[in-house]
Length: 255
Image (cartoon, rainbow, N blue to C red; front, side, top):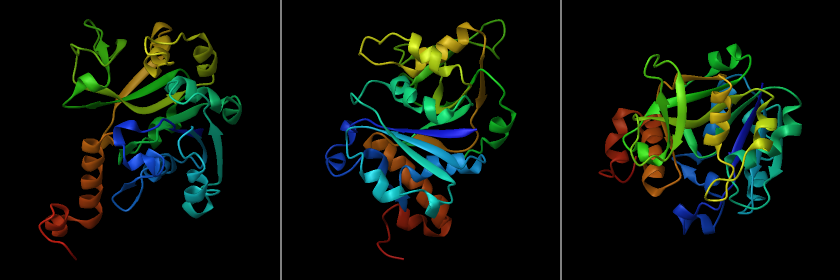
């Protein structure tokens, strides 16, 4: 299986930081944000990766990641999403040639997690699989509505619901078989003019081919100042250890 990291968009919620570079290259503790999804894919045994980026500072990725060899990757490719914010599914369509008829693991470039998805990747055969995480603010995410008779089945995923049917969000981590690109071609733009990943996942649901699993461990996006801080604080604590909690909390200014 190959990996795809979606790292486009303008990062407007992180202005003025993203005037300087792409959101996914901002630091999360001691490394660029995009290194974390790269490591998630590597930990799952994936060393061939495509990075889909867009109009905002696209060339900066080559300066940081280069050919991927320094990060232990076998192969890295880059794709440029035209049109800026046309949606996650629109960005994903640029990976069709890279996938070369095989399945792909997709992760959003601002998602950081220490969960290990290796077993899910190794056991994946067909259809699609999403990973869920309990969140305190479900109105910000795509939220599954579970079947009342059989709660192991997702009947529908609702994007940013006003009245969330659960507090488990669909994280920005997906496994797709090679039918994903035909499904993308059948999608219609949403009310905000984007090809939504929620609509893509619902297409798999209609075919009875979407599986799910809870994501163990830490997970957060880092696309707002609050979530960027949360991610940075978590990784600082994990890497520095509890002995340096005062530094993380800002009570000590030097080590």
